[in-house]
Image 1 (cartoon, rainbow, N blue to C red):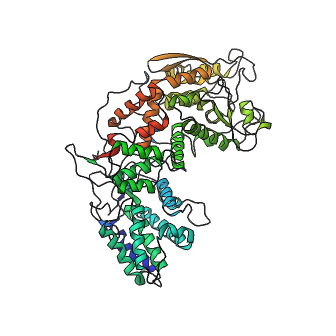
Image 2: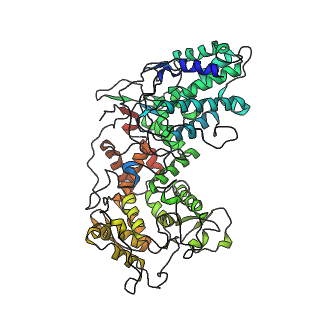
Image 3: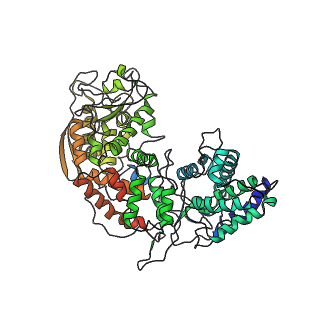
Length: 622
């Protein structure tokens, strides 16, 4: 159908140029959640073009894809920027003296782009939920977005735009060739010239694809394609014309973008979102995908205009399996899990740890994800429960790492209750313990730095030049434990301030687990007793702990850890790095966590209740 491709270029893509502002950057995620990504074009900039099939101007939400802001979806596995554990976020991290107290907040609405492009993960999820398509072809497991340009900020190149066209053609052809998939697009069986059925499809499918009703101008633009069916297809059959229509929808800026252009500015220059825009924010925040029929109906009936109406939908949506995926993606973001991270690159000395093999890596990661799902859903748990729950998931291969008899397990992960004195919380699971160990020994530095930076939000700053080349002293009669060796390694003046005060202590408390996560009380090789007592710098306090269980209790009770968790949820859910105007939300959530009994599900639902969720402010170019 080369002929109709030329027509589409003239009728649909005229509003899209090679200077399209890019979608949010950040890491793509297998589950579809986007991490904080920054912003693109100014939110005061309206759609600037007029596509024949998408209507025109800023009044109808179509036109050129000229801007993109931070969008979340359902997320990145690694996280980026200030929220990725590389130094803590601005609202949670202190300087070399420790974690700063909660800042005094300034109420306001952070500026965002009003023209956001779907992330690649959101694109895949949306195509799945809209059309039932999960692969580039009926026999391929490759997600449609594998042909798209990587998520990025800035302008979209002509090559990037062409990739949308390529994917749209492949998806449209697949749908029309499969009777089951075709039913997701066509609302009827075409008869005669098919014009009435195709008109009905334009209206019904367009409402779903655009996440809002089509304007009269948009309906007319698509209807014009139907009337020219004989010119834009080989034979002019209804199925051929339907494929052209579907392709046109999939390359429309109103499908690829999540525009927010409704409303009139209030006295502060802010814009209340329409019910359609709120529905889109809800679905892409909680599911990383388009609204379902229930949410769409609520939008049609303007029943998303009050906090109570939004909360009711959010609570319903959080029980959907897609929300499980979103919450899993957040905790991957929280733990810095994912492709090309420490979590998928573990290697161990086989002579020292014969029980370890690479096949364990995905099992350990899967257990970690199931742990979080269990706490959040089965236990309806709180932040504190993440550090105290004894829920575990074990199979015959991982059982020995937990000191369990493998004969009682099969290949599938089986739920177990672990020893509360040895295995409270996610940091005591073998996934984390393996990810943050060295080839032939534990690493108090890796474990301690993760806890201080990612859990407590403390930023020790960059190590001094050459610090990574400081060798671990050899084991001697005086240095008969790994702890003593690391203590000596980090004793030089340039190291001691950060390491011995902040980084090493939480790692020393975790020395009860060897490099593959097995409980140990004596040093391998020397038989020396392992010391897991430590004084942990938490805020302005030094908290004495005796081993992992004491450390987990201290972290669960820590206002710094609670604030860090709240801050990362705000970053993740709103898909933006720290903004001072979000600090009131972070403060409110942290206070509820501290009070106790505040479930993770309540936390997420509360993020839909803020003014900044229902209102947009113009983004000011820096």
